[in-house]
Image (cartoon, rainbow, N blue to C red; front, side, top):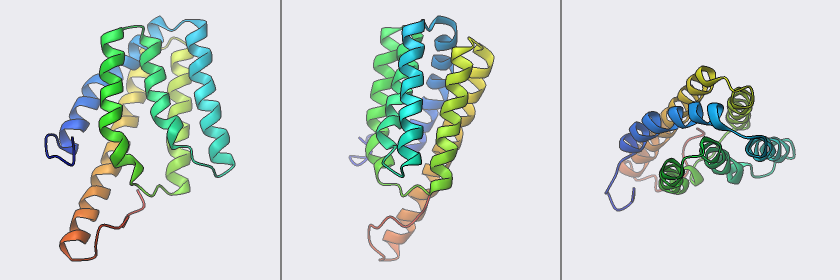
Amino acid sequence: MLHLGKTTHEEITEARLLIEPPIAQLAARRARPEDLERLLDVVRRQEMALDRRGDFSPFDLQFHRSVAECARNLPLKVLMDSLSDLTVEVVAGLDLSIGVQHKVCEHHRRIADAIQQHDEDAAFKLMLHHVADVQARLGRTLTQQHRAVKLGVGDRRVARA
């Protein structure tokens, strides 16, 4: 969708900011023990992959989808899956520094902890901050890549998000 020009990074950011924090809030309200177990398992596996310097990115999208599952609202889960699918290709092109990867894992851990504690306000605020931070990094990276292409540098991964 992004490559076809049918949506923009800005539209995806707007959608994520409007949708993901309330999903996290609902997740904190509705998560059952088995939901929490799955969510915390995703966070643990992401942290272990990062500690081994492995690829933690599959767990990133899985985290957001797991949060939506905790909300126990099928239309919101489908919407979250669609938003994840829209961003997966762009995010896959990023060269994330180790520091940024650790920051993402830390955000995920804090959000999962808030959901586990059924702290709706914290889950909302933490997710809002996380999505805003990630989307801002993504926007800066896309701008740098666009400038590089305009300058004839090519379509390389020019930025470390």
